[in-house]
Amino acid sequence: MGSESEYEFEYSDVSSEDENQDYEVENEYYNSKALVDSGKFSEALTGFLKVVDLDKSNGEWGFKALKQCVKMHWRLKQYEEMMKRYKQLLKYVTENKVTRNLSENVINAILDFVSSSSSCNANTNTNTSSDDINQNQDLLIEFYQTTLNLLRKQKAADRLCFKINLKLGYLFFETGKYAELVKVLKGL
Image 1 (cartoon, helix red, strand yellow):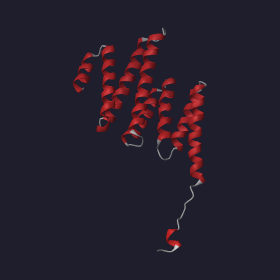
Image 2 (cartoon, one colour):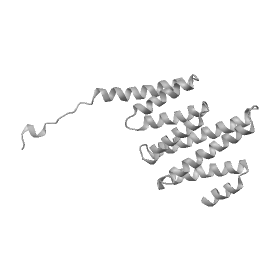
Image 3 (cartoon, helix red, strand yellow):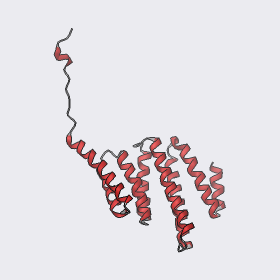
Image 4 (spheres, rainbow, N blue to C red):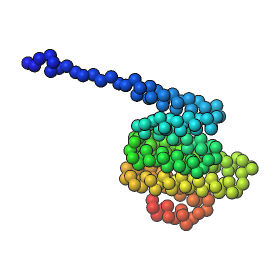
C-alpha cells in the first residue's frame, strides 16, 4: 500500500473576493427589482445595467437583468435602447450562456409583456393616437422578427420559432397586413 502522502489533498480556498462579487450581483438585482415594485423605473434600470456589468461570467444574473432592462426601457419609452438590450439578451441565447428552458421562458415573457403593453395602450388609452398605435405595432413586429432572425441560426430553437411565428402571423392578421401574413403562413 502507498504512504499517507499519496492521499493528501490540496484544497483551494474559494476567493472571498469572488464570493463577495456574486453576492453583490445578486443583491443589486434584487434591490433593483424592489425599485421596479415602487415605480422607480429609471433607478431600477441603472441598477439592472450595473448587474449586467458586474456579471463577469455573462450568466444567469446578467441575462435576467437584461430582461428587466428591456422592460424598463419599454416603460420609459426608450425604444432604441430597448432593442439594443434585447439584442444583447438574445446573444446570451445564441451563445448558449443560459439554458434553453430559461431562454425560452424569458423570451416568451418579454414578447408577452411587450405585446400586452402594446394592446393595453391601444385599447385603454383614449389619448393614444393612431401613430402611437402604429409605432407600438411596428415595434412588436421588430421584436418578433429580430428574435426569429437570431433564433433561426439555432436549430434547437424550432419550437420557440414556431410560437413566435404564430404570434407574428396573428399580429399581421390583426393589422390587416395580409401579404406579410401569407409569408409567415408559408414559412410555417
